[in-house]
Length: 159
Image (tube, rainbow, N blue to C red):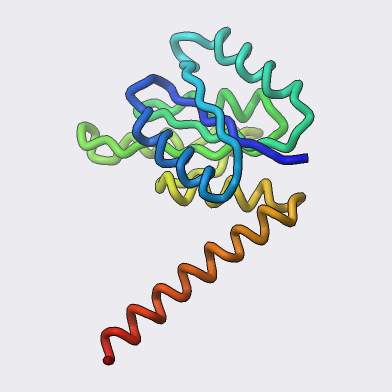
């Protein structure tokens, strides 16, 4: 049974960040669905979104994208049994200080925090790959390609 990732943005302003994640997941053959909901402004809507995906028996990972006061990641994590990865966008406006809202979570709430969108997609893939050997093989190929690039770059430098 193929797994999938739900990318939940706090607002449509997070679309560029979400698209990077979706593209990376696609490269590894993982379905991604993108949704928008705010823990602060539309908590009922977020609950409806989560209810829809929680009834899907397939393995899943939620990736939340929200900056400033990242209540979305904690809210989602408290409502679902699947893993949650918080991937907040960097904000020049706050000089990165807003990242602390993603790092300090209440007891019983434990989303992983990955700042790089490509890294969030990779972690989600590894989580889904625990029960899917095809995903694991694609991750192994990606990792080998990354190693090959380093050794190729080194060989070019030394001539």
